[in-house]
Structures are given as C-alpha cells and as structure tokens.
Image (tube, rainbow, N blue to C red; front, side):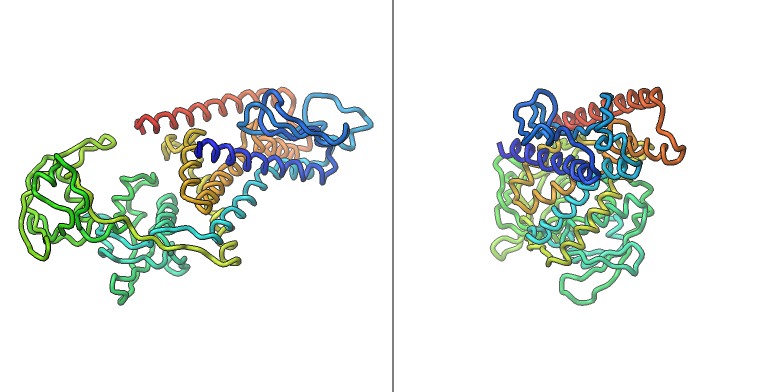
Length: 452
C-alpha cells in the first residue's frame, strides 16, 4: 500500500506541476485554457466555476495529464475569440507556453532538493574499506579507513564530500565524462592528509555498473572483520567459527577489515580450504574453513553463511538555507546534464538501453524512499522531476520538445511546417514513443524477474 500511495503521489505532483506551468504562462499570455486534466480517458470528476472559466477534471487513467487551450487543435476558432487562441499568439508566446511545462519540473526539482538538504538525510560517511588489488584506488594508494574529504575534476576546483553518496556522484560524473578524479584523503588517524588521483580516464569505458565500481575500488568500509550470526549448516558453522570471532589472517595474509575478508571469501569459488587465524575471547587459534559457492547474478562466488562486520554508521547531512538552495540548483543542473548524456549515449549505443526504466521501477523506488523518510522521498521526487523535464524537451513530436522544434523551424523560415510534414513527424514520433515505453516496461519486468 505504501508503494502504491507513494507512486500515485509521485505521478500527481509531477504531472500537476508540469501542466500548471503550461496553464499559468498560457493565462499570462492571454490564452483561454478550456480544460486542465489530471489523467486521460473518461472524466471521473470535474469542476468549473463558470462557462467561460477553465474546467478542471480528474480522469480514469492517471498516467499523465494535459492542458487544452483554445486554438491548440484542429477545431476552428471563431473570429471573435482569435485574440484568446493559442495559434494566433506571437511565436515567442507560444514558445514560452510550451517551454513552461519542462521549466516547471526543473524549478520543482530545485525546491525538492533544497527541502531534502534543509531537512537532512542519514548517510554513511565516505570512509573506505580495503580496495581490491590492482584497482584504481589500490594503485593510487588508498588504504582501509581512509576518509574522502573533497573531490575535484581538475585538481583546483574542489567540492566538499560529506557522504558516500557525494563520492559516488562525483565518480559517476567522472566516468561518464571520461575524466580522472582528484580526491583529498584523510587517513584513519586524521593526520597526513594527501591528494591522490583515480585514473578513471584509463578505464576505457563510460558504462557505470557494479563491475566498473569494483575496478575503481571505492567501497564503503564495513568495519572490523568480526563475525556476527553463524548460520546452521554453513561452512562457518562446520569450521567451528562462532559469533564474536575476529579474523586476524587467512593463509598468512593479514586481514585489515571486513571488506578484505569478504573479497577473499567471494573469490574462493572452488571451495579450497583456507587456514583462518582468529581471536576468540583474547585467545588466538587457527581453524580450517572450506567456503561453499553459489551463483549470484550469473557469477559464481564463495560464501560461508555467516554475517561479517557491521552495518555502517551514519551521519546526518544537512545544510543551511543558502547553501542548501545553492546545492539544490547545482545538483539539478548536474542531473539534467547527466540525463542528456545518458540519453545521447543510449542513442549512439555507447550505453545499454537497460538503463531505461518504466513505471514499475519508479513505483518500486517511490515506495522504498517513502519508507526511509520524507527527505529521501523528496530527493527521489526531484530525480524523477528532472527526468520528466528533460525528457519532455527531447525533439520528438508528441512531446514539448517536438513543438519547440516546430517553432524553431518557423523562426528560421518564417512559416510553420506543412500539415503533411506535421502528420508524418507525428506518426514517426508516436512510433518512437511506443517503442521506448515498451522497452522501459520490458526492462522493468526483466529486473523484477532477475534477468537484468
């Protein structure tokens, strides 16, 4: 029920704000707005103050909405009403009315991000665990317990890093642009801060996935290698391991943290026995552990059926009014640029079309963030609002960007596109939209079934 309600609220807020942008600018330009509808199909509820005012409706299919303006369709306009008709307004006014919808979504995103910044979220700090051998972080000299305090793309313009989310965002942007990432590192003791460079530009890929993040080698510290629950019938129980055991070394290799121990366990896919030196109640002893193996996402990994380490500690990350608003505006711009880059890379086949998500994924994330709290849900709404604003600016008929494309043609040539070309472009745009929606829905189902 939480997921359903969160999804309905998400759709309602984003669609209404988008259409309200069109509505307010249309009224400001003197255009008569005949209907403001949330949803499509049969009307379930309507309200109209007078015969000349706008009719507000709630329709049966709540997967969008629309604003119907006088003169924005095939119906003829009476000569007496032409001064209130959309298609009789100057080009700049028509452009402003169409662009107002996406602009409203981007303005909403700034407000939502700002609200999340002001309320604050609980985030794990950017304290790193042991990087995999030969990863970028390992080559750069990152060590367990290092804390990232700032990042930079050029080594001179630095951005504070207050959470692991900040660090992952900086890495994602560097990957998509193919740039190295400069990071300021503070050791666990707090002395000897240094700057290292992650050679992200040497990876030869701009596809952001779990495999790439392992090659970069930046992972959240999971604490000391201490065992928690030991499950019956597993390799840990058979070896005699107990909750509270601290792992000191595996086959003579010292274990610095949980991250390093998990890498060794998962890498043992052939159940080769290993000698673990552990500390139990102040006494050191050696036990032989033979990990089992399972398939996880088409990859074979070792496992011992025991909990290791601890849940990362979190810190409240919040900002004052001015800083929170400035960060919101900057993050909205960065998210918009990232969305455009990802769309272009999918079009040029440099990125997988699996990145395209549909309503099922949106509903899932809406429910998850709503359960986490208001700040997380506001951040999620902001992400979807940015996506909606940017996607609507794509130069596809049926979208606001398609109409803006027509107006650009009119501005250059002095005349609108012919009815023949409008019909052809509309048919082609509709086919592209159906294909994209079908692919997004397929991706949703494939993720649900574990195929992606």
